[in-house]
Length: 60
Image (cartoon, rainbow, N blue to C red; front, side, top):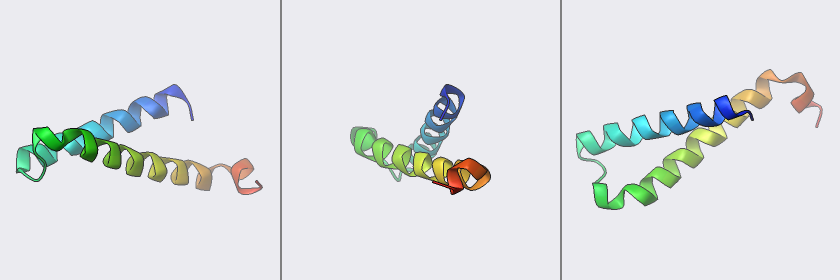
């Protein structure tokens, strides 16, 4: 994945965590663990989406 994709993944994960903190579902003290899990989930989703739209990735 390119740096633009990585930057977008980071931005999306951050926005999700901020919303959860605002709603009270995540406390700032547990930010680290939650952010890592959310980031990994967003990254996996982005990769799956990229792989589905990339014909070369399907042949691997």
